[in-house]
Image 1 (spheres, one colour):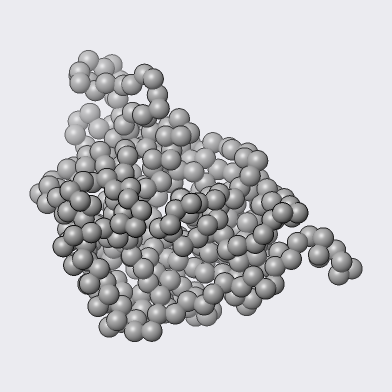
Image 2 (cartoon, helix red, strand yellow):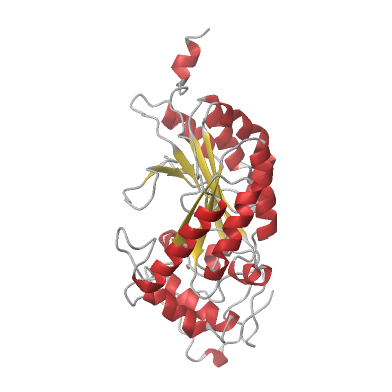
Length: 355
C-alpha cells in the first residue's frame, strides 16, 4: 500500500482523495491530520462486492442521451477515469465517489438470468439496450466475472439489439458473439478515445488501455465489418481539446464510421475530486483548465441543464464544436451508422413453437 500523507501521487488511481459521502450523518475531518496514528488515505487493493438485483434493465428519462434502456453489469469502475460522471452514483451505495469508486466494485453475477426473465415478461417490448450507460462493461473485473459475455449470449439468443460503449480492448474476446449479432444488425459498438497522449492518459484514465490499443480495437472490429462509432469524450479544454483533429483522423483511418463528442462536466462530488487531482497532476495549468471548463458551463464547473450540460455553451464550447465539426468533415466526410433491427426479436415461448 501507499499513502498520500507525504505528498505522493497515487499511481494507478485516478482520484487522489476519498471525500465524504454527502448522505452520511458523520463525516471525517482532515484539518488536524498530523494527529492520526495511521495514514488517512491509502491505496488499498480492489474489493469486489456481490449484488443480486431483482431487475437489471435501467430506464432513463434524460433527453440528452440517445438510448432509453441500459444495463450496468458493474457499479464502480477500476479504470479510475478522474472525470467519470458515474462517480456520484457510488454514493448511493454508501461509498465515496473518490477512491472508493475505483476500488470497491459491485458486480452482478446473475445479470444474464435476470435479463432473460425480463425479456420473457408478457409486457416486455424490445428496444435497443445500452451496455455501460454508467460504468464500463469491459472494465478489468469482466476478465474474471464474464458478466458482459453472458449478457451478449442472451441478446444473441433472443435476437435482441444491443449497443456497447467501452474503452477496453477486452471487447475483442467476444468478437465471435459480436460477429453473429452484427449479421442481423443487432449491434452497435462505441469506442471511447479520450487522448492519444500517453502521458496524459496515464493520469486521466490510469487503468485503461492506451489510445494506440483502442485504435487497434477499432481496426479489428472494422475488419469484421462491425460498425464502430467513436466517442471523443469527454473533451477537457486545455488538456485534450487540441487533440480532436488527430483523434478523428486516427479513428477514421482505422475504420470508424461515425463519431460524437461531449464536453466534460463536473457535477456533485466530481468537481472537488477533479480539482484536487488537477492541482496535483498538472499544477502549472490547473487554474487555466478549471477556468476554461467553467467558461463552457455558464461560469460553473457543475452543469445539470438539459440540452447544454453535454455540449456546453459560450465561446470556448463553440470553438470546440467547430473544431470537431471540421475534423469530421475532413477525415470522416460521410458518417454512417446503420439502424439496429427489431425485426428478428422473439421470446422464449415463440422459440418453443418452432418445435
